[in-house]
Image (cartoon, rainbow, N blue to C red; front, side, top):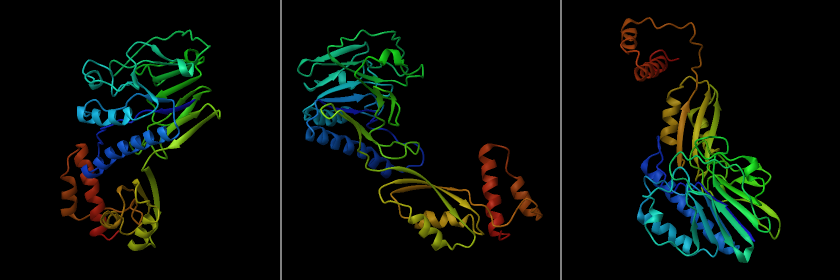
Length: 341
């Protein structure tokens, strides 16, 4: 028996922050690309069971056209597909999956713990869906028929009371527990795994992302990468001897074309503000953000601005947080441009 364990696709996720619309649209399409590739992989290896452990889509943005696109992919799978809904796609009355005819190979778990029996595989798949964003359910003990292979499919934080916590005692008798909600893959108990998000969704999710593939014939549980891009946090150290071209070359050498970068600049340099502007204009990457923590070349602890007109300008800012930030930025710029520090 071969099993695909995926989850946390967050189809139609809206990317917040500084990401421009054209980049956000490409990231949205990346998820579809990865899921389509996963479906191809599932058919290629002739998987028997395809588990989706919640947060399949973003219910605020996912529409009927998206659902049709998704179901077209699912109905072409040779595997039996099982879905539980999590906190981002919970199974309330307005869930789109309740408004259409579903493919015969797709089974959706409702908001009470239940199982689906696959007689030809001597297997039972257990699952439960959220019916609201914060879903609690008390699970004390479960009596599993051990003459079957018993698989659990849950969207759970395990420890956080808001997201259906589950105990090791409750999970211990399952043959395998497929977990969703945590976007970082990992083993939590001997029989329980988080697959992580199918693709990385923010700078908190570094490294490769994909699925867990179980091949019972070979007794193997392995990770398969399905992420097209990576989110990378990159620190670049510069020094006062480096020219702008040398700094650009150093940063560019660390950049891979398809990835997204949050670049922290550290060190010291005479032109500590202009470096950022230069990189913004000349660095070549799919997407990058700059955090400029470069310090001026000289020690400013004992340096005082004495020109009256400059002091009046700086003192004109109020104590509001936004104006404090504006004053700090203005002061840095004046130090570099006016005092050549």
